Length: 289
Image (cartoon, rainbow, N blue to C red; front, side, top):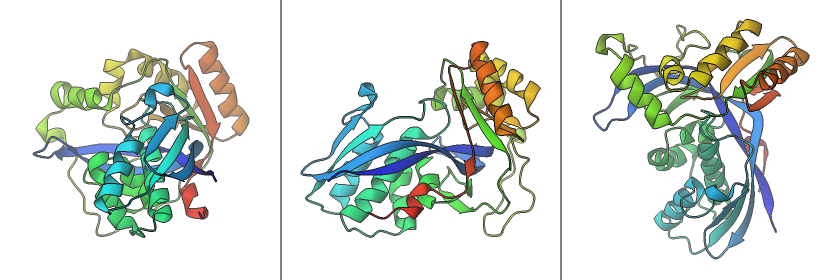
């Protein structure tokens, strides 16, 4: 019997780059929250790992879900598989973590259905090599993150109030290209954010909407710059999520968010929009198998 499980999108409430590790990965200082936009994973037990998707080019062994489940199965000596169909709603190359969220939900489900019973820290340690965004979904609630995104603690403030508008231009952005541009075109060593410890709750968090990667993203994709400029005409809280290309704006009223979403499409500044709300808890926390 198939069961359906949610894989929510995330937004970065802010994103600062602290430095670069010897392996080339970036040291981050960021905060994650979820939104009420989810891919849906239809899961059933099977002999092998099988991954299909509503976006056919994302199906098969190259999908991150297939890779992480195959490794998880092998590392625990499991002789069963899972058949997973991913109904995609989160756009790709948007900075919303869709592929990573699918992988995290699939891992949580496999952990239960295969009766492995690994705890959250074990899952995060296992999943981090597969993608720096996966841990924030496994963590299960809004968080501060450092390292490459795997060192997590609870977000210590109230989440921003208001109604959310997400918008993405017609062209996406490669995370690798955005970081490459940031490293080689913009970053000066003395401009990197000084690292802060996660051992205590910090009271000097960066301002909501700060994103060190925004200038690089706008240089690489002028459509992002145009989209942000328009959103900022209607909201004093508008920013880019992650490495882009999706942008976020907050409004006091749902009608205002929907009106601007319509305007962005009419002006062909966005080819995808979503209006909704920010969530502090991952929806898998309320689901049993």
